Length: 117
Image (cartoon, rainbow, N blue to C red; front, side, top):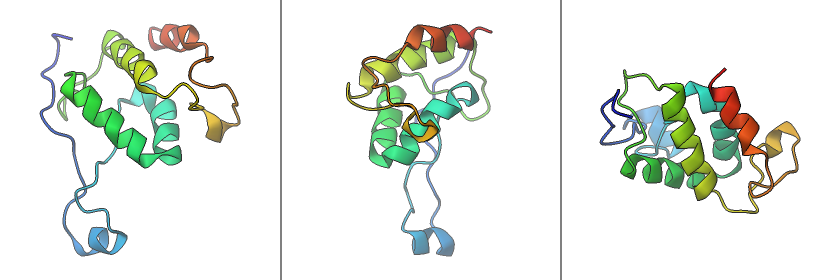
């Protein structure tokens, strides 16, 4: 992970009229890399608080890149491993896509291999 400088904070929704009306001022926006978008967006849609906690956890670990820096396949792999460790065992990662396999029983090896293809 020496190829990018880790971020020091996560982007949040700014204080404006629309965001105040939605009550999302200061809430965390998407922080995940594009290669993990399906998994992370599913986590966000199922449990926003888990998604935010996961983002803060990865930020503390130094795994979230600064805004304009790119993630390599290796960076995404390290992030995915940490995500898997963080998720509760009974969480269903791709529930919104119709999957019923829990995080504990999911085949993460194929997901990791896909990052390098």
